[in-house]
Length: 241
Image 1 (tube, rainbow, N blue to C red):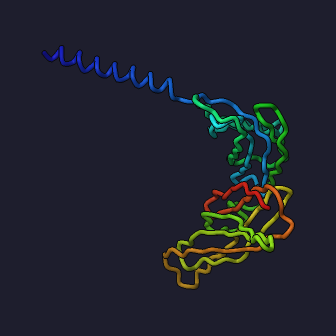
Image 2 (cartoon, rainbow, N blue to C red):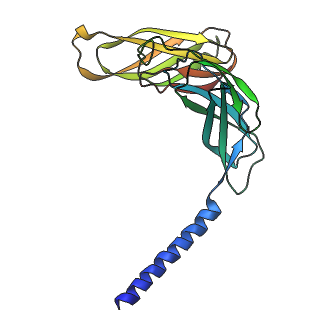
Image 3 (cartoon, rainbow, N blue to C red):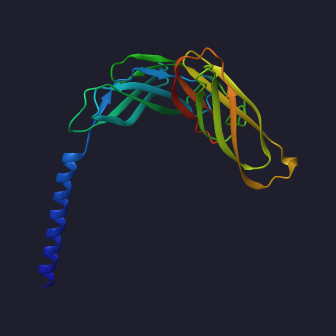
């Protein structure tokens, strides 16, 4: 009786496994490598920084979704190869270009000048300079714990305003400055704060919203790159009218 019961259980488990395999094989997307059209490369990274770039491209139809990425750094040739992958699903696909972007975490990189290349087509994506850190601290400044950032545009005047949001964990941290640096396609924001211990700190969540008016000749697509206290920068691709 026990043997018969065991055989039935084994049979049910086997049947379930076969059924699960059938479902998986028919619904799991393929992983394919896709071409990168452009890389947004922020400036100001040191060799003790968590270096990040953001890439963008286009899927040929709606059956592609953003997948994982892989990187390979060759210290001898100073080349960084980025492989962007996508999940390709079966089904009805609308034939239209679908834009995508993804932030690539390159981690800690030795100081030097590097070339970025796309693994799919071997195209050059630009160059990035990694400076040698001059101090043991993670950052040159103490940054605000930013959790969100975006740019608003006044429709009548066309004025662009940067908005940085977050929350301090005590009442001893205050804003000192917000530095904004511009390149041709990247806006780097450094929300600098300072800690005043003599104020009699107490643990308390203090939300903040800081706004800064940006220069008035910004038009087109930019990467908004905002440094944050925890080392996880905010990266957003924005299209400014």
